[in-house]
Length: 431
Figure: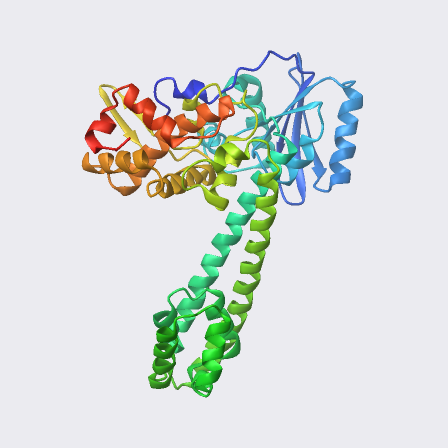
């Protein structure tokens, strides 16, 4: 339950539109179940449509002909995905994404079994669409340039997460038969380690390499410290095999070879994404705003741009951004009791973007470090203090974004001084 006026912030003031019909769609891999109810009618029609673009286009063409181009409200239980992308190109359709948690709670409330069935779910979506549309936010696609960055940064993060998962698998297998690798090199997913394992996947093979061959290898992979190179060569020569059971070792070798190849492909893919994101971001008219933020850099600046988007009319104030991003906490109350807790219903990726960047800003911004330290002194743990900092940052970014101006640390510090901010006095920031 949202506290105070926060629930109102979840909806957007929309002009009253007289829809010709209301459609709800329950998405599936092979076919989509739909229901349709004309305006001023109590009859609901039900049917199925295939998942291929040709089938969906033919189905929409029938509706368009039936309602002579008049607008149709469509409820779907997702805000992204193949179906939404297909429906978004039709101006006649006004799409209202319904949070899955909302339909899940309604299913539990109205059906004793709580079981999910496609026809029943389409009726639930219809009820929400017709009776609680003011609680929903109509999907309004951003500019193509912004959507490109939004899609790229999210897909990049998935690749990074996949690389992390495969790296953890690789380390687990290495600890079974070649535990020296994590000890000698730390990050097992580094290009150096992957290249080494690709060439010498077992200790016995590595120890057969000549010292000059190893020196040449390390230098080729950007290891320039001679002392480090010599210490590694010495450690390789003195190491003892962890296992001699060939049944186990051979199986581990087979898996490690595959994982190394997977990690190398992911690493190259992420580098390609980085280049494409940088090109798209630098071509975006708002990128200079987010590029000016301390600690944003090549990775976080495009993610922050993607979080805000280009539509200035989308958010009425910074509080909406704080709420929808999940940075603002939730206040609940019952009787005379009230409590505040972490917000779960939000875009995890957007919340993660603000949280990760706020942590990075601590080392790059005087006031951000001072504010973080002040929160810690007040008893907040690290992540709570970072969220508090992100909450404050959003207000600042929102102002820059609305006014289309770059962030300037000196200007903000001067504003703090002008308002006699206790932050300056408490932390003794030098102006």
